[in-house]
Length: 142
Image 1 (cartoon, rainbow, N blue to C red):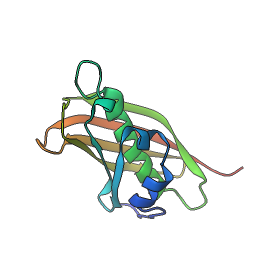
Image 2: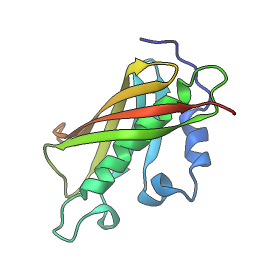
Image 3: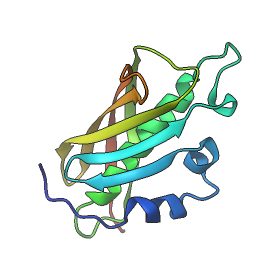
Image 4: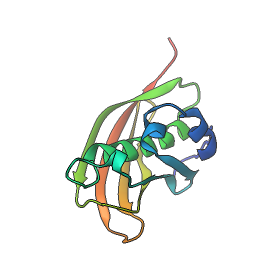
C-alpha cells in the first residue's frame, strides 16, 4: 500500500464530525490503518426510505465519509484539505435492520487527486450492499 500518514485517529475524526452530516446520520468511524478506512452505520428508521429499505443516500454518505477519512489520512505534506469532485455508486442490495459497514481503499494517491474505492456490506449477512468510487481534489494553500 502507500505511505500511511494518520493525521487523525478514527475517534478523533468522530469527535471532529460532531454535529455534521456523518454524525447526524449515525455513522461511526471505526479505524484507519494499512487496509484502509472503516466506518459503520446502524440501520434505523432515520436512514431508511419511506418504503422501509435503507436509503441509497445514506449508503452513499457512509461510503463517501469513509473515503474522506482515508483521504485526510493520506494528504500530501503541505496540503490544506480536499473536496470530492466525482462519485459513483452501484447499489446491489439493501437492508432493513442490522449494521452496514464500509471499507474504503486507495486506488490512486496523487499530489492533485486521490481515487478511492469502497465496498459497503451488511455485517450480519455479509451481503454486498454497494460498490463505490470517488475522486477527491487535493487543496493547497494560496
